Amino acid sequence: MAGVKRLGLVFGAIGVVALVALIAWKTQPLSAMQPKVEEVEEPAPPEGQTYIGAKKCAACHFEQYMTWKKDKHSKAFDLLTDAYAENAECLGCHTTGYGQATGYKSAADKQLAGVTCEACHGPGSKHAEVCEQFAKKKLSEEEEKVARDSIWKMVPHNVCVHCHITKGHHKSKTPKELRKK
Image 1 (cartoon, rainbow, N blue to C red):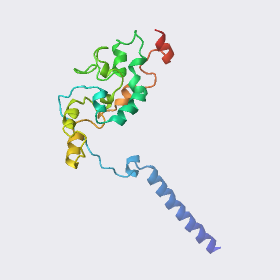
Image 2 (cartoon, rainbow, N blue to C red):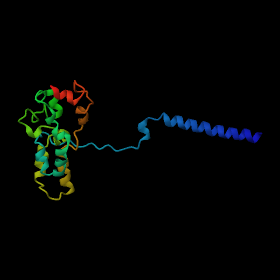
Image 3 (cartoon, rainbow, N blue to C red):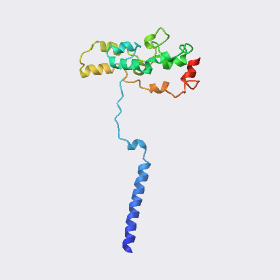
Image 4 (cartoon, rainbow, N blue to C red):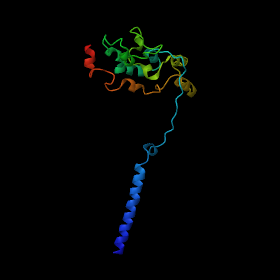
């Protein structure tokens, strides 16, 4: 009988320890459970950049350009009917750089119609200028860094969400309804 009591106390103690450990683990903030990742801040590219259009990017990034040409982003402006092709609410998402000094202003800016490279990477004039001097040669680590630091890897705010909010920016519910106007 004494052995059974002792065994009960041992299992009870193990249960209490397990329960305390579980509670301690569950009450830790999620960030404390995740491995620490060193955040690396990307340097800002040079100021004074202007938009240049995707064709200029293709000079060095031809594969990416061809992939983009087949992607819906390249045709974003083409989705706009005449009624929407000059609507500021639409142009912010269906063109590149709309509202910026050197961004899309009118249909004459064909190189910026649609969502181009610069919609995500920011204006690319200085990047193109810097990289032109490297013209298809194998770059050293230092030259790669110079090229990389002349443009954003990705614009530092959540650029995708600005346009990809589910039906939040359209008054109608379907693309078909939008095209009726």
